[in-house]
Image 1: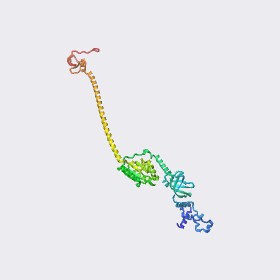
Image 2: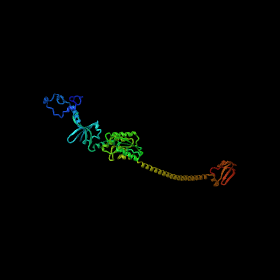
Image 3: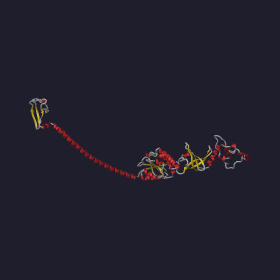
Image 4: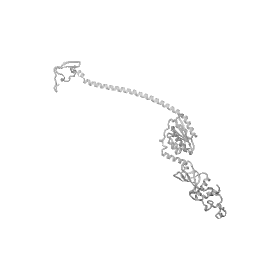
Length: 438
């Protein structure tokens, strides 16, 4: 910038108004380290007339406070690179739009801090009051108040404070929604035809899972849905991979995981978006993140948790040789059970036959006895029995029984049946007995 341009910019910076341009930093501060100007009386004699109108060097060319603070901000932001500082968090306030305002202090000083929502969203959680943190920040000036402040880009807490707070916050929220409930867990299929593996194609987990599945059950197919499994973009990538598998719809079970790593490396599997996507899969999900000591929220939401990717593959598919032996053993047991059922049915049939025969014989015997009783009673009522006792049975010429004297007239022929034959006779006279006569 030449001297005329700088002078024009500085002159504009000294004006006030809503639409005035930002001050030219160099014009205002290029002589900041130069010796102070002479006194007013001396200035008239020694200062060249050409410099008397430069902004800020006389009451007539005074600049606005806004121009001063904006120029100061530009100088500070351009001169100081982002740097890490350590201090205690005081007075944290979370704005409704997601911004965080707080103060960092130590025993000797303090500085106001702001973390814009775009940066806060990348943080694990808001620090607690009194928590000591390390913060990556960029010095700036809040022009409206002329205050020096630190724009925080990233924060890290000593120990596991922020990690634990973020984990517990998400865990409490999802647990209240029932995503970790035992009754939501689905059983794994006995013999899946296809296993979908959601992991990085560059990681060791892919090799471990494929090797175990091919060794245990060669007839099961393994399909890989690539996803970034660490870094800032990992949650979005994992969710997209799970959704691809769900839309494809041909997997019987899903293995979600990666090999070991630091707490930061595994944090994507604690992301709320990833946990919800895993819990919402239409088929059972096996979570295998890190090593056995590592527990993530995905482990809690999955249908089955495996200590390692290799263990997940063992849980997903059976050993085919064991399955064949099991099927053969079931076939033998089924055949033996069928033979036992047939033999038992044969014995029950034989016993039923004996029972039926006995029941039939008993029924026939009862019928015979009943018939004999009826026959005896009929025999007692039979005319033959009467004849056998010395009586005779009379019948007219047509064979009709003669039961009354009115059945015959004098001179009518009749037959008298006696025990050993018949007597043909004729009625000489009939006589009716009076009542009381025998």
